[in-house]
Length: 156
Image 1 (cartoon, rainbow, N blue to C red):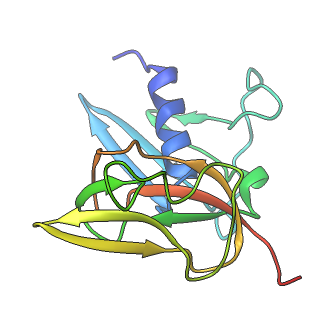
Image 2: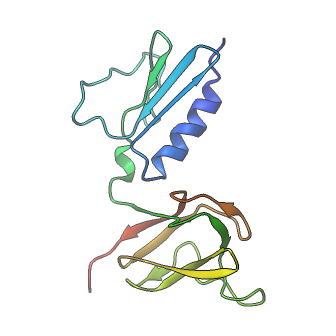
């Protein structure tokens, strides 16, 4: 089976934006293993064709290992606490609770998840700046799915 590098890069991006530390996938006899944090493991050399600044993929037989993305060490990923429907606003005609670039406070409501006809507020755990919103309004989301990337800021 040919390895589809674009699909692997999509998986790497998904893992780098989530709290998942490791993903292992086996399909048609090919095994792919993606590790977010390799600090406690042996260094994995980047293949000669890997571009500077992009995640390095290393194939050992049919195994692919990805080193951590150090450019995102100062970011926090806000993940979904449960399965449900993601909403950016408190009501259908209201503006979104937050936008990319917005400065938020700890405890500020940043989205709502509907689960079994119950609406659950998701609040920021730390003050910061919203770097990315990773789900679309009305998307069905899974527990643990990355919803926001936030750069924490200290108190002024």
